[in-house]
Length: 197
Image: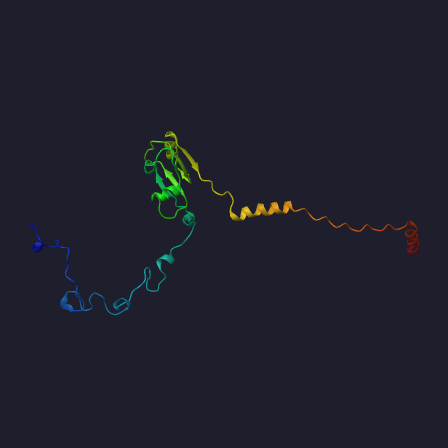
């Protein structure tokens, strides 16, 4: 029977401390496994990841081509139908309610419902995205799905029609009329023609 006075650690769980700097007879060599001088032999000397001694590192030698869409990728908070089965009939389930129930955490680009599990009663779900299987199961249970409407226009595009509407509303200033040209008398024009000839 194991008691406090005869308890032992599991064999192999404890190791003897590796003592360095005890000469060649220690089994770790004259230089304690650090080689002869250099940056890595000094205390506190370290080399950053990817450093190759000054030569052009691999990450800079490889060509970089093409476009990566990772910067524009949207991460949706995912909820399955099995998680929504606990809500009562007629409940309006949206992102705010799920956060209050601690079913969603962190920041995301919206809410997406997936079809893993079954719904027993009708609920109303408001989300940004719904899979086809989830929509089918929700409607089969008598529930409804409403997708949150995203703004169709960006902030700049929304400003432009408003500015155009303002310009359309303001009446144009009446154009200044040009002074009417004075009519010359026929007698004077005839006299001028004679003088030129």
